[in-house]
Length: 64
Image (cartoon, rainbow, N blue to C red; front, side):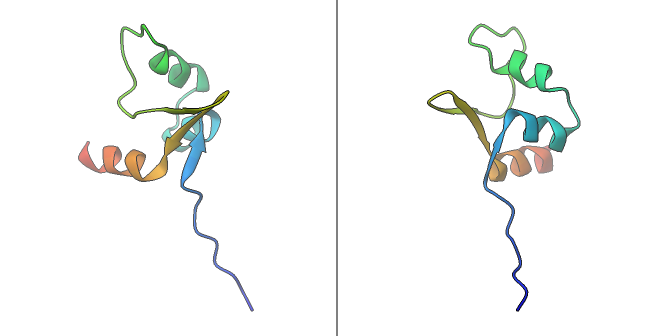
């Protein structure tokens, strides 16, 4: 029996950077508290982990 894996809903900074073809540093600079160019997708922090919702990322990409 073959299982189809659904994509994970949450992405870390490195996965998001790869997904958007950006460098991780660009993402980190955009989510910094006093960023002059804030990242357009909201980051959520779970302890030390910064995660992004794949659904929000896809919605943002569709709107562009």
